[in-house]
Length: 401
Ligand code: ATP
Image 1 (cartoon, helix red, strand yellow):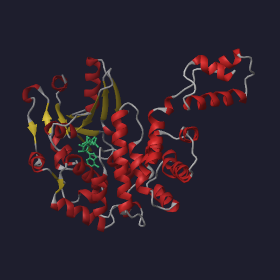
Image 2 (cartoon, protein in one colour):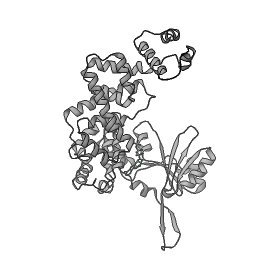
Image 3 (spheres, rainbow, N blue to C red):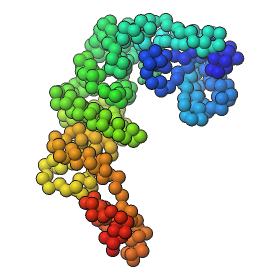
Image 4 (spheres, rainbow, N blue to C red):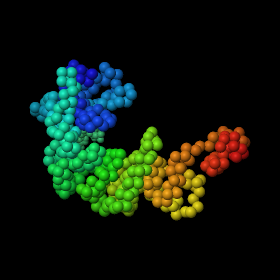
């Protein structure tokens, strides 16, 4: 139907980029990117009306997102050239070739397009040797100034290479080294680097990518004093194991995966260096809190637990209940004592879900006055529950009374 609507409007329609790449690599497909030789917004409006979808449009960029009732999304971009014949004239809009749009992309493997118009539906377009590079399992840029033009592509090259198990082509690898030598990151916004880093940390196993980053000396882009030592890699490996365990058991409980890896990477840095890294990357305030204050709090608590020989189950509960998933997982990766690791894991899998049956209204019925005493009693009930003393609601009421 996309192609048919395109035909009605006189536009050539293509599905492009990651979708085609992932299709050929038989990988799971998360989103669809469409390029329209014509006005993408006009297409999105017409198509959404026919199919009963919502749309968001971004006039300035000539892009739109089509959102189906089940929330499935299609990104639409316009391959258009706009130019002004004289300064005061109205812009002349031309259908520009899909080739120009594809030529602006980062790597050859992202430059494939498949035609969607009924006359040539399914025809694959490969201007830049994408099929060859997919077969050779190689990441290659389209032109030699690619990394100078946009240095975030260096992180993207490493991400794709790690994700697909592809090598980075020799020329491309040299271009990366050259771009780093001429200090290409100097004027780059920290937020863009942060966004690429997060994407790398969100991959199933980012450790090979971190090693590749280090092989290019990219950690120095974050901070000249950031050094990744064998201990850092051990901790990262440990994070990877814990996150795999967690994600298998708790698929539906989202948390910022990237943050756990980032915390591990910063583990050996001084507070000042971490602060400077956050400033360099323009880390937003809330996320700064994750990487700085909250991380230090988690590390401090873990030290206290590990250095005390008398930490009870209840004390552990009341300490850990204040920390979100990302910190619990970080602590589990960091902890040295196997018994404590088991106890934290037990907290996460069992104890954190334990809730008393009794509520404030039960205490009211017992003739108690609302106030701090309520939470004190609920806390005692919970402690007794954690100890296995209370099983039923009746037992809890008796205990509270
Ligand atoms: P992912 O599976 O990680 O989402 P993707 O290929 O879909 O991979 P996006 O980051 O969603 O990647 O980008 C969509 C398309 O936009 C890519 O196929 C790529 O060609 C292009 N692109 C993204 N970032 C850049 C960039 N910095 N320079 C050039 N092209 C880019």
